[in-house]
Amino acid sequence: MRRAFPTDKFEDKKTPFYYYDTDLLRKTLQTICEEAGRHEGFVVHYALKANANLALLNIISSAGLGADCVSGEEIEVASETGFPVEKIVFAGVGKSDEEIRIGIKFGIFCFNVESPEELEIINELAKEKGKVANVAFRINPDIGAHTHANITTGLAENKFGIYMSDMTTMIRKAAGLSNVKCIGLHFHIGSQILDMDDFTALCKRINDLQTELDANGLSVEHINVGGGLGVDYENPDANPIPDFKSYFDVYATHLQLRPGQKVHFELGRSVVAQCGSLISRTLYIKHGKQKQFAIIDAGMTDLIRPALYQAHHKIENISVPADTPEETYDVVGPICESSDVFAKQTKLASTRRGHLIAIRSAGAYGEIMASGYNCRPLPKGYTSDEIGA
Ligand code: LLP
Image (tube, rainbow, N blue to C red; front, side, top):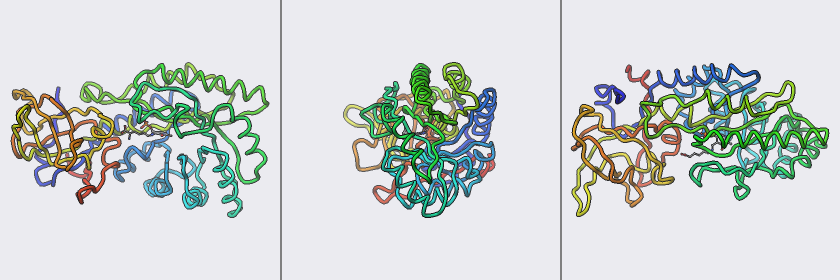
């Protein structure tokens, strides 16, 4: 069944814009809280980088999630939208002094530290303020996740994290510094991961590492396993809510925790992807020599994922009944780049100028990655609450 969009409420809106179904978001959050809640010590943070639309952030913080931030600005926005500072973690391979100061000022839960030099800087800046900053070490577990090369992060060749072999040295180094306290280990192997075996592999690495820490008489209170759970871009209506049960179960089954240890998750895409669609209009149908193009008013400036990662998003003509005969199109945007293509040779209910086109599963890494290239205005985001749908 195709999802019903409130197209009558879209008529007075300037396209392209993002539309967020808050019912689906709330159901997704409820599932997350139920499934994580079944396991002792599981704490879920929302990765703001996936979407920092303020209305969505308010809903997500109300559900009780913490925040995973990657810039000083994200920390400020998270705090303004109701995420308690003691539930904010701050990651990133290149935190500026200014950003570290913001984290220290807010008294966030933890800095995820990526290098020995960063550890020293955090210690120095915390000392200036007479504070002790909690830190976790981001470990590069050297695990290849089965996902697009641009969004794997846990391989030795990636810029992220500290090598496992340097771990104990880092923990000892932190113990010798007066204004940082090492409270945990942090991992993240990549994004859009649907093969649960990848997460099992991560658990095994973490177990090995903990054994090594035990042998050195070291321990941590928190294990942060990052995010990465994927969503079904092919069939958003069949699978609107990702498989959180299997995801949390993998960690509950395979992670060998020490008494009292907490497990933190940083979920982005799986929280918000399916509730969002980019709504656009068909501008022209152009009959090329070999193909027919549906030229729409949304471009790679509004949703860059297809151009950047060859990502697939389902595209629907929502101005006509679902059983309208289909035609084959290249669905393209107006930007002066050949990569401004949403789909090649795709089947779409026959479209003409003025039809509304929904690009589905666009709630994560969509609006937030929009740019002003070609001097285009940034797309607005409306929730179903706001437009009364
Ligand atoms: N934690 C860390 C340290 C991360 O680097 C990321 C995402 C997350 C958590 C959240 O991961 P998620 O649950 O969303 O998979 N722009 C790309 C995705 C980049 C992901 C970057 N890191 C895309 O559109 O596919």
